[in-house]
Image (cartoon, rainbow, N blue to C red):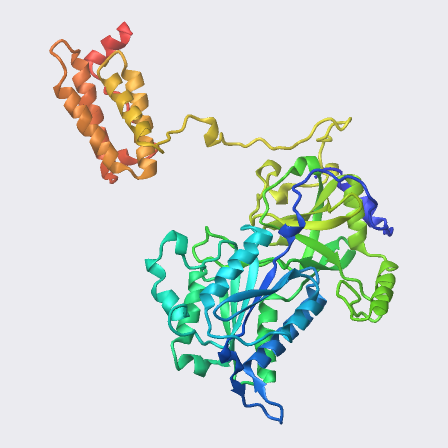
Length: 555
């Protein structure tokens, strides 16, 4: 890794650097702010069924709607403290839907809207889901992941427009009238039921709601109230949602003996490796250890799974957090920020060092899983410390080689960057020749296959003069057919060669018939797949005859 000692010396000196000043930053894969968020759409059921009374201890009468408002208030308060960078929208629905609050970070507005909701008519979930599609696509497009929190009592509606009717007609719809699920954007659907499991199981409501999750490619979950309907149990249900989807990811960033408590935003999702026989979600560690530094020009613009903000969590002397959360009192918030700004923080030091040196820090996320830390500019006056996650594996970036084999310049016999810093050891040259550097067989269209077969037949009619070319093209087609599992092609070409043998004129060279028969037999053996001659690396060699030697002399 380049200039590891130089970058490390800046960090190990223990100096406190102020926040980075303005200026243009180096060219890395820059993500817009929209790519660093996972907005939430809260979809609230305001149909008449939500006004059903609930037996709660005390004199005050509660409706299911009141329980839902209580749970959403708890969710908004949590997000205002721990997810203040997140955008949230509020949609209400019955037979129609209405956007009460567009995407905002003002959670006071969201909580005020909860107390201003009116009651309407019957439930129509399909129209609400269609409204969510429109809202998200208009604001964020189809590439930004979004979380949808559907709050309902489990009543599916009646007649046309009910969830039963929508699911029953799901397979009979045209493309212009398709069901809104799966959403046209990456999403997770969380259904918060203002009912307990026994109530939902008494009808087919639970089965229909589970079908919604299945239609959304299995992305989401259904939450029900454990026990009787009361404020305490509603809090418990929304607490489970918060633990699953809205818990901040806190980690410890380490570099040698220097550490910093940080929050990674948005929360990194577990990654599932498809190549494994039994896929297991792979989650990053809470200890993020910097293993070295690389020039930006060397790491270039690598492919990444996701990008995240890295926010320092300042601690006061008592060990309590004073950031990055928010407080209700503006004076207390300003005071906390002033205190945090006077405390030296390794995260700020690292950010400034990477920006000044024009480097990225390679961080280990887990066993054989790496990422990179770098500075990214939001504007000319503001930049942030970012973390991008590479795909798990020992060699996520082929041009750098295996991460475990990288080391400081001091370990090398010669400076790999030259005395004048005019060269780079990267990219590493691959040991094996890549497929795109060879003549590969492509059969995307029928014409490509037809051309390859015709080439073999043309050379077959010019035997023995074209013997070498004939077997070269024959072996190329044979290898491609075995690689694709296209064994019927081998038998078909064998039949063609036998037919060509019978059509040879009387003036044809005797060696032509021997070579065609030999090639046809070899292809038939390979088409069975049960012989050593069917191996991929085996090549069909020309048949040695008394005529082949004399014909070779003539050639």
